[in-house]
Length: 109
Image (cartoon, rainbow, N blue to C red):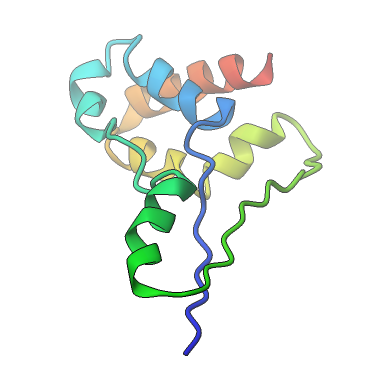
C-alpha cells in the first residue's frame, strides 16, 4: 500500500512567530498566552523515524511555497484566515481591534 500525507509546517515562519510575540506583549497577554503551544507538526525526521520501521521504502520531502500576496497588509489578512483566527476569537471589542492592529504593525515590517 501507499500512504500519502501533506501537512502545513509554517509555524516557524515570521508571520506565525509574530502572532505569539504580539500575544505576549500587550494587555491581552493573560487571555492569549494559553494559545501559544508547540507547533502541531513535527520536523520531517520525526516522521521518518516513526515510519521507517514499518516500511522498506520511504519517500519523504518538504516543499516550501512562495506566496505573492497583494493588498494592504496582505500577510495579516492571510493569517486572519488561518493561525491568527484563534487569537482573534479569544478577544472582544477594543482588545481584539488593538491586538489585530499591533500584529499588523509587526508583520508589515
